Length: 543
Image 1 (cartoon, rainbow, N blue to C red):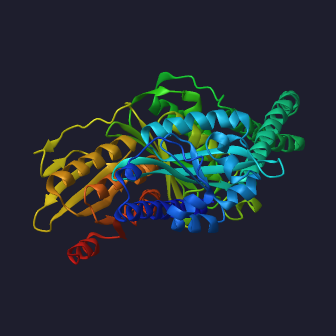
Image 2 (cartoon, rainbow, N blue to C red):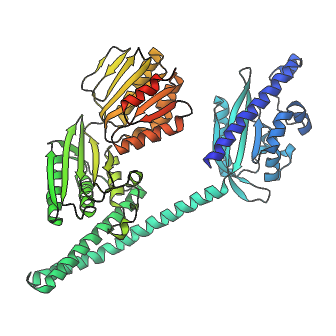
């Protein structure tokens, strides 16, 4: 679908060129000033043959294109449709002109389309909208319309656009969403229905446990049954949480609490649940945090239980919590089976299970998905560092303040800038911008850093950037879309042509970098490197 839309945009540009060329040719042939003068008179009365006489090239191309093509005057009235439109709608060429163009459109969508259409005409902005339209058989079909304004000598002439049938894709999307909604509804109902009898079973087992001696053989069976009830309770709670997340109804109770105390209690509780593992709380900085203590404790439990589950032979689990640059950073390290790099970005997806681990370990793959949502609601982020067979370390970061605070800034406002997250220097000898990112990054720090880079690029007119992420820790993926759509295009517009990007040791940071750069490689020549020497040599080799 994306490829088709790109093709449509390309062909639209081509048609704009043909129309502009035809109009320029008309002027060169000595048309009178009256003919050249732009008027608001609609071209409804013109016949198809008259239009073809003036713009043969445009008509020839438009009639060969396998989707609908149209053209409007400056007032938004249709002055041309191609053969595909006539075949699709069954309308005649004459009936399609003017505002007859809207006749086959469904009334609710047409009202919305009309409002968007007039808004775009007023500002001469690109136009894109999805709506339904009746085909020749009277069947309502979903279509995507895209259009661009065209000009002659800077004078707005109207729009040239295209329409493509997307009914199959739209129906698939709707069907998938309906199935997902029904599944969530079922899970919510089933979870609620299971909760009541499970509570009764648990109470009965507790009564039975009090009536028999621990030395009795049946006591071991009862203990195992209670463990399975606990696991079932966890699964039901996870299903309920997922249903609430999807419905936007997962409630949070924000209060201030001692974060280190919550962490220590969670680790102590897990020690009782998993006595065969050795938990080491290596560091726990004292700090108060405002958030939902219960939900964050749920995240800690999930990380700890995953560490136990996926390290059956690894007995040691290391937990740390430190305050760094206005953030709490928590890590849980195990020495178990590990995770492949290609699976890291998917691990927090709902119901996702790595490889064939479902054959070996229980669970539905919901815990990390729920944890990620809880962390996001606290304006935090998460990431994983792992090698297959070498264990894994799960991290999450929580900001202590809503805004990123710079402890100390050094800058001359022209050639250099430095704070605790970024060091930017103009390298006059190499005619480039040297950028060194440091420590834990988040959306705000990435945004601030990119704007600083853009400011120095504009002031010094450099075309090359050495972007060093060697000292970056953690994950800044929440900012990757902004970097792709805002930062890099702005740098390209300012004149940057080459960018050497040195990877962070963090796999998640590497994935964020690749995601940011992928759509922009046609605008900026972006190359990735694992060390600074190779990156510098590449930039130096460029003229």
